[in-house]
Length: 350
Image 1 (tube, one colour):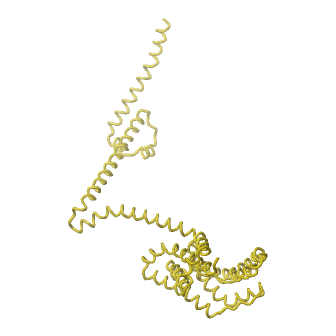
Image 2 (image 1 turned 135 degrees about the vertical axis):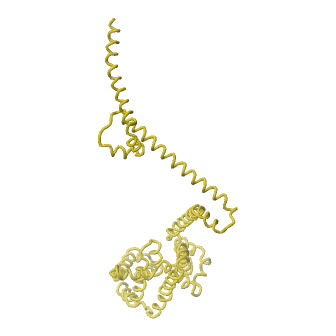
Image 3 (image 1 turned 90 degrees about the horizontal axis):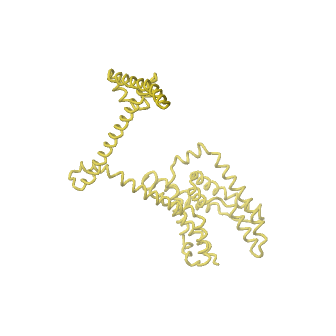
């Protein structure tokens, strides 16, 4: 008896709630059918825009219907875009397959556009791999120099040809010409306009820090060596008092530094070395070093300045060729300088 009473009470409580929900649902459906323009506007709007435009809250059933309509609209839009994309790729594949059978030149030009993307992608991928390989090999510059020096000590006959005639001058000029391919006149003008203070600062570091550092290292590490300590010490101090050369410009090119500034510093330090190098060597080691100023200026002009100007001229007249060659010049310069170092070591013998 008690169970039947409980069941009847539950039915009495559930019936009004179900009736209320049924009435609300009928009202919402009738309101949507009564105003077709509002219904079409709601169907055309995506979910976020429609929720942003509504200012008054909707009943739960109406909100559910609107959300379902929004989902249907977004699904239809996605399907239509997918169909258009599939149709585009289908037409593209048909045109690619029909390319060999096309007879007129105008059709060839139109349909070759669809193949250019793939060929460009393949070319870019292969060129990037080649550039990465060349960059890795160029970064191993010290290893190449060390290997060439070891080869010059163990098998000097293999590198003695480097020291014959004017081969070294030609090789150094080739390195500087490759460096000039990456330069333009505006690079030097930019140095004088924006970084002019770097020139006297660089020259001061060249003839102050390097000689003192060479003197300190030589006195601590080389002078105590018996028999050959004095010669090694004098040679190290002489190198420290010497101006910058081709290798410094090559290192600046490899490090992607300011190559124009490096070339200017090399030229200025070389011209000043006519006076500063003998003076510094005499002050540090009490030894006389004769420097032929006119010969040094001629050598600098022939090996540094003229090849750089030639490379700049090629870069201005044939930029595409210069850009293509510039991809290989850093690694080629590394090999050339390594051969020169190995030849110098091999000339002295083991």
